[in-house]
Structures are given as structure tokens and as C-alpha cells.
Length: 103
Image 1 (cartoon, rainbow, N blue to C red):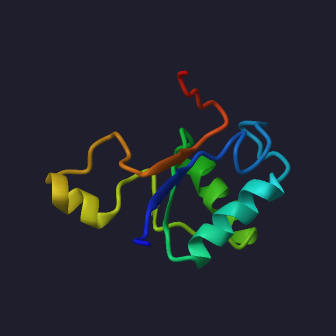
Image 2 (cartoon, rainbow, N blue to C red):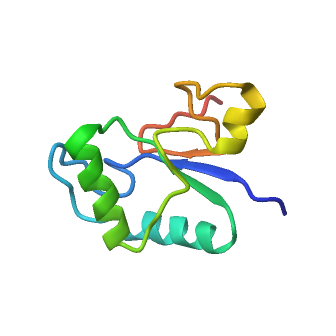
């Protein structure tokens, strides 16, 4: 299977939503992300956090053993394909606590 791109939200997904603080880890989601990374998939941290709050989130993820191929931006191959780094993150899967799938 080819590598897929997974975009992970932070607050409410990788940790409990306690913004601007960082909530308790959501272990099952972190384990899932780590397994995907081990399998060779690409991970993007996709969050509304910015500045110092984003820096703290990235550091917190690293402390959980979780690193990303991109943070709030598209992968280089996606930028090359479309000729820009759109505000919309291109991924095969979006992992978010506020997702809605229509019937």
C-alpha cells in the first residue's frame, strides 16, 4: 500500500480540549498516529493553534514520541503538485474530534 497522508487535529483529538492549556493525552489516538507513522504514512499536525501555543503543542507531541512531516502546511510534494501551499490541508484522512459524516 502506498503511503497515505493523515491530518491530525490537536485539541480534543490528540489531547483533551483545554485550550489554551494542553489537556491530558488521548492515548488511543496517539497510539494510532504512532502506528501509522511506523507503517510509513505521512502525518500532518493540523490545528488552529498558532505562535507560542503551537510551539507548545509541537513540543508536547514530541514528548509523546509523536513527530510530524508538516505542521499546519501541506507536504512538499503536494505544494509541488498544485503549485502553491493552499490554506486547505490536502490529506487522505482527517482525524478530528469534530468530524461529521453525512448518511
